[in-house]
Image (cartoon, rainbow, N blue to C red; front, top):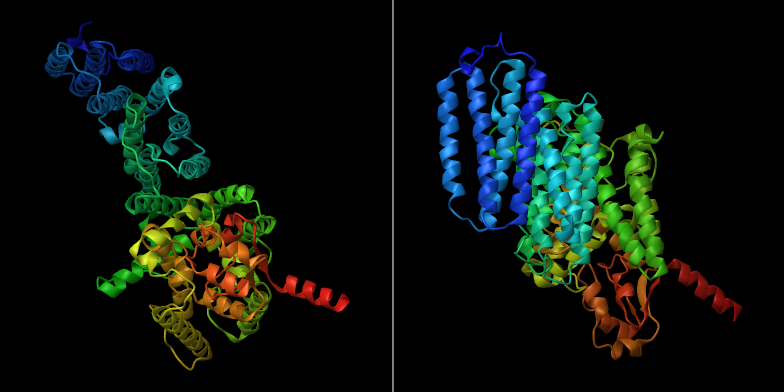
Length: 639
């Protein structure tokens, strides 16, 4: 039987034919990869020639099996043959462009093979994007990636080895290929969490030098962002197209970076734009991941309508600017306030904070960081979402963790718990300082105080906006923001209570005003300030005065026992480096003068992070709070 006689009736054993095609393709591509990696004269040409011929063969057979037209087969095969011959006899030197071209051709060839095998099996056409989700493409490509890494392993630096190993773990985990679809979603998310931690830890450890790892990290994080965006898009539309494209892009990147070392060098601490790009991309990826995990866990309804119905503040569906802004805020805060977003962020930031705890030499800092990590896990995640108390949280004092708006509207039944939260927190701040919130129980310190994000405090001193918030002095604009925000919060609380009583009927697009303000401040504005750290400096919530829960506790703490003290004022007088001022993550730069004149430092802005204590080369600074006051009282009485 000749090719002219082939029909679907005469074409038998599709599995055997598919295995032959896939095995041939795999063998030729492994040879191509090997020859390209060796990089002898004409070897790159031959590698590209082989991959082009495989692409041509797959496309020609794909076309042939759709129509059984021998002319299509011959024309496509001949065109790729002549193109391949031209390339073969024109010597190319291995370069970044050539490596990219080879990686693209190799990946497209495998996609074409997936399309060809689909046609043989199902006797119908398939678009190339869907072919990326074919097991024939996925597993053949996985083998090629593993082979590429093996033959290159000794020549790769440690960072690229780690990054590539992580990416290889993701490669075979296409959710559409498995019955245990939801399990694969959890697995891919966990791998990306580990990868994110690894990226930030790597950058932090290399923060003192210029290197290529920052751009390698940006590339990898960009691919992760598209991948998670693809999974999010699937839950909205039922289409894997974006995810498949992201994986194809990831494979091209993987092969390209195997063949081509990064040459561009930089440092995230010397470029606010590089840091901003990385932080913004990471947050977008994390936001997508939080949403995907909520979909996967059944907390969000699937489909666009299901997601809209899941929005915590609702959806206005109007095109005037205010409504569009409200809808945008509603979409963002629904995810940033979700439990799986908090868990995912806790895993990432918690590891970085744990690394800082291990590196700390001051015992009190170790204890505080341990309490901070524990408070996030217990106070911010377990109790509100998983504990037996979760359904009655609004009735329990100290459970309104961020004050007004945290657990819902202000009603008669929750007044005792809400006021009790303020009283308990005020007492703790008076005794131990506002650090009991701003450096322990709030979710913010876990995110700011991990190794990588803590290092961004350098931008407090190097950026235009960051420099405006330096020193402990409370400026006029800061006072205005504090007063203005707190008036709004108090007003919304009163309106909320009057709405409950039936004396008013004032809502923000059907939502309680105190809840909207809370959601806007802590689930939108806070994250906006967080990702803008490379342009505004860290701890925007402390330095800009809009965190009404923080400023309440800072004001009480300013009246209380907490302060920083020094053992020897002369050590400060003779200090040449002033490391304490450079270490402060909220930009307090004038503590030295107070140490010299008073032997202590007390400030509204000081939230007791303790980096100054850690940085002092003379071990001269220590924390002072109610414990020391009681101890001193007993010592005086005993003497």
